[in-house]
Image (cartoon, rainbow, N blue to C red; front, side):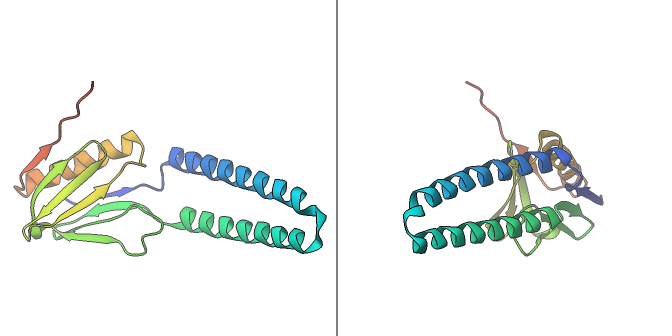
Amino acid sequence: MDFYIDLNEDREYHWRTERKIAMAGSIALLVICALNIVAATTTYSRALYTLMLLLYIAAFAYSYRIRMRTKYYVRSDEQIIEYKLHAMDRLKQQLLWDSIERVKFGATYVAFYKRTGKRKLLKMGWLTYDSVIRIKRQLQQACAERDIPYEVAQIYRG
C-alpha cells in the first residue's frame, strides 16, 4: 500500500510554532533590553549588549526560516518507508519493509523492530492528534498487507 502524508498542510502546527517562537523571542528581547539599560553606564558594555541583540535576532531569523521551509512528511511504497519529521535533521529516515520484524504503536510514537535486533523510533509528540492518528492508521494498514505483526501499546489513565 503506497501512501504519502504531507505534514506541512497542518496549519495549526505552524500557528503554535510561531506563537512559541514569538513568545521566546519577546522574553529574550526584554532581558537583553533590561541588560542594555543596566549596562548604559559604560560605552563598551552597551556596544557588547547591542552586538548580542543583533546576533540573537540573526540566529532567531535563521532558525525560523529553516523550520518553515523544511518539508515534513511520511511516505511509503512497496520497498521502503521514508519520513522526515524534524527541521534540524538534514537526512530523511528510510527503512526497508523487508528488514522490519514487528511494529509497536505507542501514544505518540511508532517503534520499528528490525531483524538485526535494533529499534527505530518514529517520534510524533509534536504533531497534532489528527496527524498522529492518520499516520498510525496508514502504517497499520501497510503492516497488515505485508503480514508484519504489530501491537498497540496500552495507555493507562490513572
